[in-house]
Image (cartoon, rainbow, N blue to C red):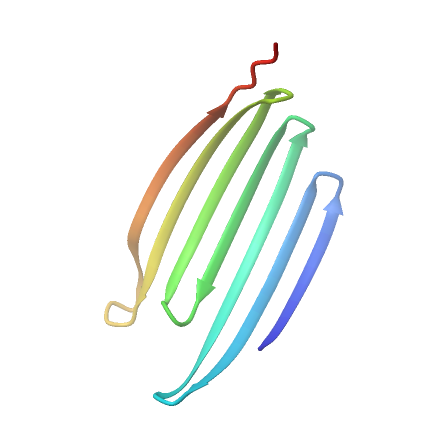
Amino acid sequence: MHSSTVNVRARPGLIAYLSGEWNRVDLAEGRFETKLLRGILETQFSPWIALVNNVQYDTQSAVLGWQSRFRWILRPGNDLYLVYLHNWRDDPVQGRFATLDRRAASKVMYTYRF
């Protein structure tokens, strides 16, 4: 396994991560290689609001995935999350990426102190 990672803090509240991983797997049934490429961009607009985007591609599944996660801390212990996921399959027949699935979700965390 070989991997590389680069982290860049462009300015306060903005961090970018780039990483790659290469694996060669030898099994009795045969040998294959996989590559995983990932990019993450974290943006913190304030101590209370943040947005994280994660894009990833792996050669084994031929899927490009994107996750976008928004977090708003309404007050400590009370959070709102909005998450969007989108996956595309690398379709060599069509010569382009075709949507595999997409989803959205939300989560509210509420802390009651007594």
